[in-house]
Structure formats: structure tokens, C-alpha cells
Image 1 (tube, one colour):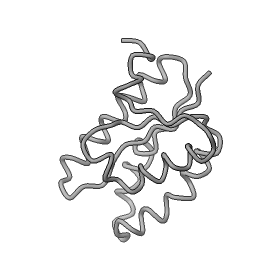
Image 2: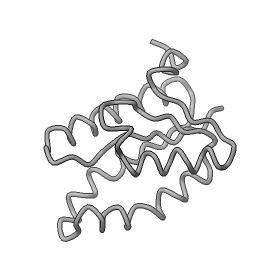
Image 3: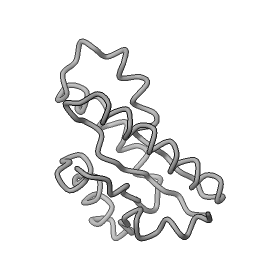
Length: 119
């Protein structure tokens, strides 16, 4: 059984873009789960909670989630990155990719592996 940490760019000045990324993560996570794999979608978890963290700026939110993400990354055996616009520029996504690569674990792009999870 695959254990996948799902990564996606999240932060953006336009709330419509942020909401699109959240919905996209949910859709991809559902497809992965339906295939029988274990998936942790950090954006799916954090987005609703972030509404209750209005007192924190982007850096503060990132600092809050980093150790939580680390716990999940420790038990996952691969990362899949939703390669939507902004993924290459996302420092969070790049950091997560490096963590998996440094552990000798696969780091894949969704556009390249989506076919592995059915229709």
C-alpha cells in the first residue's frame, strides 16, 4: 500500500486561487484514497483550520504547520506534488520535496503519476 504525502502550492494573494488549490487538493486526495492508497493532504487539513488563525501572518502559519507536517512526512513513503502553477515557486513545496529526496524516497508530479490511480 502506498503512503503518500500530497503537496500543492497554497498561499496566494488572491483568495479565489487559494480556494481553487484547496478544492483541487481535496479532489486529488479523494482519487488517491479511492485507489486504496493512504494519503495525507496537508492543504485539505490546514485550509479550514487556517480560518481560525487570522491573528497569524503567512510566516506564522507556516511556522505553526511545519512541525505538524513533519510528523506526517515521517510516516509517508512518497510525496506527490500537484504541479499546478506556482508549485516551482512555493518554498513549502520545495522544502517538502527535498525532505523526501534526502530520505531517498520518491518525489513525483501528479501530472506524471495520476494515471496510476484509476480514472
